[in-house]
Every structure is written in structure tokens, then in C-alpha cells.
Length: 116
Image (cartoon, rainbow, N blue to C red):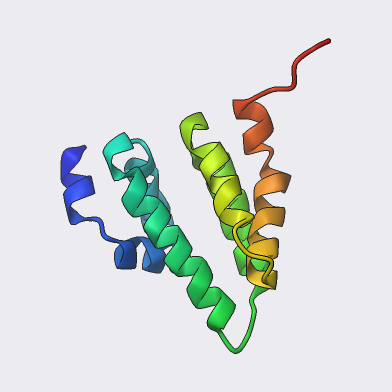
């Protein structure tokens, strides 16, 4: 598990999120299971979102799909940080990513509402 954290950097994470093929999903899934790689994961996520925000064409469906996949795949310890990353800008790219996260329901599964 620690070998994955050593080969990961923010560029490879951003590129993997951009492609999101089955191979990239498997690699990102392994990366998310390693708590020592969390900072690299979020640096790559921010780089990915910044690249999408600067792109000439905003691919909203791709961003929503990425957010939904991350929301469904990320362990509970990452759910709050994913939502914080999605709310860190008001740009439409971040909004599309946030919509995907919300539709996945990952935050609600990780932290269910209290019954009063």
C-alpha cells in the first residue's frame, strides 16, 4: 500500500481524474485507502478542478460523473474534505463537481442525520 503513495503525485492524480478509466478508478481506489496519500489526493483534485475551470469548454457531465464516482468510492474519512474542495470556489466547474458529490449521497452515508 505504501508503494502507491510514493509513486503518486498531484499531476498523476489530476490526470487520472481527468481520464477516469477503469484502470484509473482502480488506482485511485487504492490511493484513497491509504491515509498517508490523502494530501496528494486532494492536491491532485484541486489541480484537476482548476484545470477544468480554466478550460475553454466546460464539460459539466464529466465533472458531475467524477464527483459522483468519488462520492461513491471514497471512504467516510474523506467525504467532508471532498465537499470542502467542491465548495472552495463558485466557478461552474466546482458547482458541477459538487452536484455529482451531492447526488452520490456519500456524505450522508458517512455521517447520517441524527434522529431526534
